[in-house]
Length: 236
Image (cartoon, rainbow, N blue to C red; front, side, top):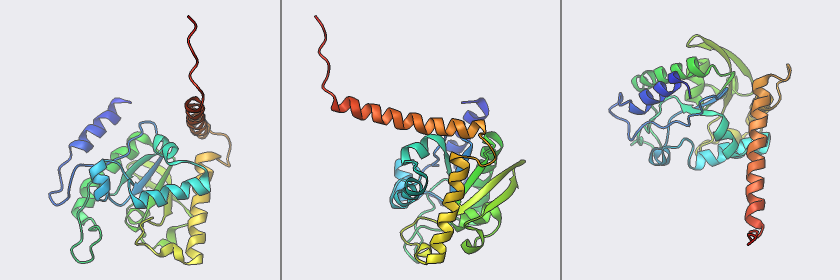
């Protein structure tokens, strides 16, 4: 971990800029990640566990990646930096019982953390999850206009691709429509092309990611075999 990244995490975890949020900042930090995922904000379970996408929305999100990309949750978390528009739980919305949408001041406060991550990591791809992340990264919150496409974005002095996914919350019914489900599948196909096999050649970072995924799979398989095999007796 380089000094800039370590200093960033120290500043992020020490941040107490927003008085109306609950708990401490949450981020899934990966020091050498070339792909980032940016969600909306942690929920109450994420705040408790200090782990992004730790509950039902996370299960649905990682199921998408497992089904369409063949990448397990463990592999995803080990190689892709997971952040959010804001990093603390905003609390409940008293009107509808769901999570409160972060206000503009909270979003602005946390934007500094995201900008530092973009400058330090210089990702090839940022996956924006949900309307709030889409608005902050590509400037449009209408999902039909942004899902299923690659957007070229410059922010914090760095140019990168953004691919938008709908939010995997159980409250969302957006993917119930066939045409929207098709847009989701297209976004996942595009993400897979970047993560697993760049069409413009075998870039070193793409190959390294595939080797990382393969190593994780081999480690899990070896552990499973070891658990099933009887322990060898030591020779006296």
